[in-house]
Length: 328
Image 1 (cartoon, rainbow, N blue to C red):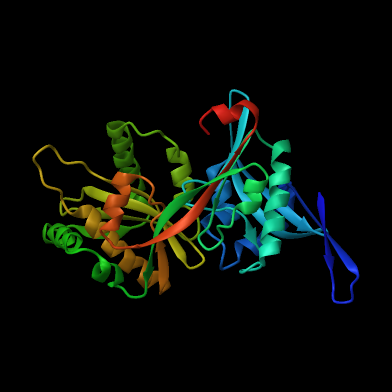
Image 2 (cartoon, rainbow, N blue to C red):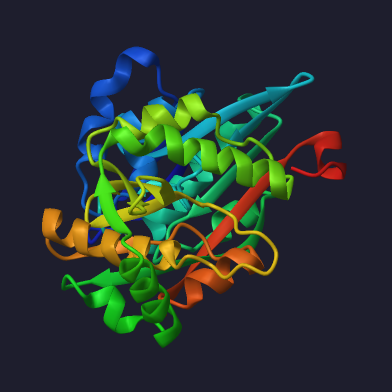
């Protein structure tokens, strides 16, 4: 706990005490107000964090009243305990009750959080949300901060994404539609999507950072949606898992069938995204499509064809002892 002395208009000192601690499993009621905040993200939904497994919440208290929370996923290996951002969500970080906290409140909450981490873990990661990227208090406490990027797109009409995308995207989508491909939605396509994703992982040597069981749990959450493009023969060509929180819909997982050398693409991935944007607009009205990251060159290159807005986030990391010599 640390204390900040402030001088009021009368000249008398007012002492505010900020502290942070791990929330117990029976303190779920403390999280309820934060899960309903419109300025929160998918990572701040208790059901989403629970579906990932290993979820923990740290609460920041001012004078005994919780004023901010931060979600983490705890992972342990060889006795090393690391607290990470709740991937596959692109960011999370600290969430205050106030949509626009004062600079001093934000700084004090981050400082309290940083002071608590050495007693909880060997390392920690926070990815601060767009618009809330002031990480100075963490840096002053020994954390490292680096820019992180995300793509987003405001969808205010059924054809908004199609109008914004490059001509090549629309051509590919028309090609798939002309071949008889159509968009479908529901859990019936989940097995096929995960099978295609498994083939993609194996082909590209990608780690299994989110097990299939976790994807199934996410797909079953309120606000989640599973969509896919099916060919005229009934084969799933491309599919995706989305999850909604507040005014954002996050593109969490996408997979499409590979084509042999010399074969042209089916256009299914382009049709998938254009029609998925239409589907979600018809379900929710105007929303922000969160492309969930723009930090891997090959992935960002595909997403860029839809002409999204680039958002700046901050990835702050903390390590102790020998962990500074190891990749976090």
